[in-house]
Image 1: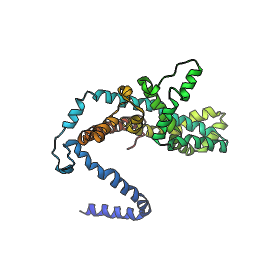
Image 2: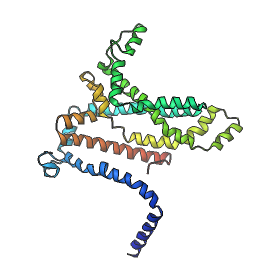
Image 3: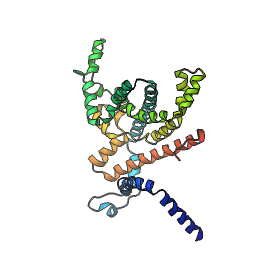
Image 4: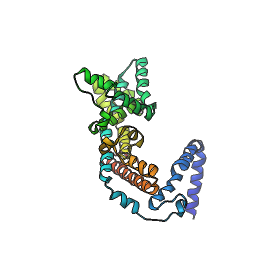
Length: 308
């Protein structure tokens, strides 16, 4: 009892000491409680035969039936494969882009030019998905698209690339890289800024050129940031947003474009199968959580850098 009392006194003492920090973080905590944790109770409809008239608690329990239905679905393996491949290719080809761009930007000494390049690279991040998809459709139009004009210029025959399944993943991933690499480079630039300038001065005195400074000082200096962001990306490897795919795919590309999130959208919102959609979404979240925990454990063991 005395031990608990001491701990409470210590807690109150620390709270008084850090009251300014606690006050600053309180709105964030409230936000997450209201908009992220409180709605999580709705996930139980994945284990129920949800009826809007009966409500969440009034609907009958059906256990794991929705999960069994999904696992036995004819689309199960196609959804898993498409979701994983799109995320995996996006990670392999998209993850290094912001790092390379940040390294290049850091080497630009002309401040005005650097700011212009940064601003131009950030702009795609603020363009809505609808507009981006509209731009893609126009660029790839077989009659008036700029891509078709270039293909014709070199003697090729243009086609409707959005109707050909072999181009879909390339279009999706390359447009995603264009939209996000500038914005994603911000955190790496911040990490580079935190590297001790004395290390560069010592390297220059030892005769290291700029390339060697990048390889032996800059890159090692941002490795912890790279690892943390890689772990976070692996935690979302099965989370492919449905908005962009729904705007770009069509029945001709379903075999490579249909992913778990689009399937969940069709089943849950379009088909009004709320419980089934929730079960598929919950399964997707569990897989992501397993990836995150595994990646974090491997990183902690190999590099001693981890989220927790």
